[in-house]
Length: 125
Image (cartoon, rainbow, N blue to C red):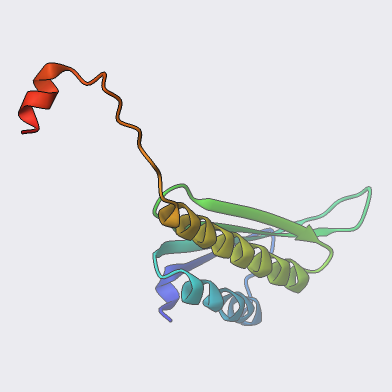
């Protein structure tokens, strides 16, 4: 896998080598399921809260043909957030692939009525 396909950024936390390695190892399977991924952007964020536990947020954006796929996960542990993000992105990619397969396999019957203008009928001969 080419590491240039994954962009990792951090907000309010230091991106350690172990965090980067965790992201690369978990996100690698996404490229196996979908070859047409242009870029994968992972944003890791630490959000301290006074009212409840601190949150570690992992956001993923898959740039692909068509609309981008975006998922955000928050938990009390960054590694847990990364794991859940990888699972959700994986499910989203698989679902999108299944939908494309289903849509391309559907046969659509087109009813051509007798209301076709004469100019079109003459050109079809």
